[in-house]
Picture 1 (tube, rainbow, N blue to C red):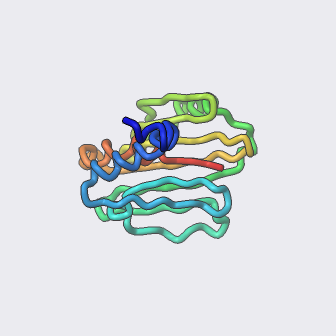
Picture 2: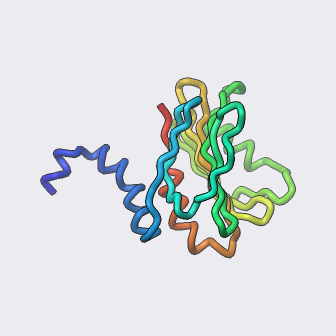
Length: 164
């Protein structure tokens, strides 16, 4: 492994999610979206999420749809309530919204991950809580019938979320 010293472990760690996306979806090429307003980025196979929706007027992010009923959103918001990863997860777990249930959650110092069901679909969400008081999010949602297709993708896609 002599080349690992040349490219560095952090570079290798950044490339790993992309290699997972590429090997999991043999023909799908990765696309990286970078938001001009908040600077968040995420990488995903644009042959699957191939229908971009118009970016909102406030420029906070964008959504892509797939032909089979899945969606991916990469967005940012100002953290005006000084929310924390733990506070976000606790609030979502306590939600009484009909058709919404969190089945998995995990937090770190500046991030949170949720998964569950919403309106009959499976969702997976990752949030980064930036030092610049911006929360950056990637949200993937898909029908349960497509679990075998999307479960291998969502981890790599959501781990690709970055902020400045």
